[in-house]
Length: 240
Image 1 (tube, rainbow, N blue to C red):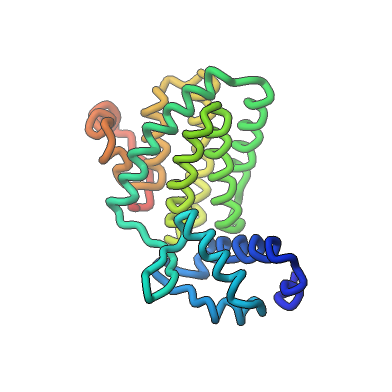
Image 2 (cartoon, one colour):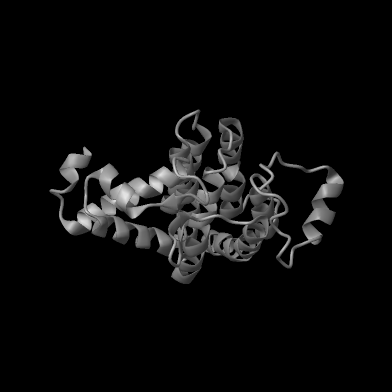
């Protein structure tokens, strides 16, 4: 669809189109962390009025992808290392619970769905970072959904989208991204009940694939390291 065709779309459809386009631009790194998103400039780029652009930006703000600085405008969100660690500390608690609930509620159809997602991730090559981020997020959202507790999904969705965007715009190498995607099978094994790891240890190991010391702001800080680092377990995380 060309920019010139957008003005012909209904307002709700136009807002959704702009939301998806701007979100993908952030995830792909076109817009960098801390970069100002100018309404007028975006409206000219997409050949639309400023109103649907403003609505799309507010929707992005609700998802944590942009922040509003009074009298300055909208900016692509940034996270400090401490903020990333605190979000991951909460993920360890909530996603471990989701893993346990999924294991209890697992059906052949749900297992087949997870297996299909894992196979897609394992087969991912050097394609777009957006596709990789979408596969990763789809797996985790499926985990939250099939836990049967929609409040777990609501809380995590409000936090994790911005975390995925943060990692995507760091320009993670394709090799590291491929390595990370291939290590979702360990989480599937926890759901299937075939893993020797506890859900908590599996989540920490998974998060350590891409983040430094994700358990720092959780009750698991120290205990995981003492159990696993002494055995020489390490992961090539991105340092963020």
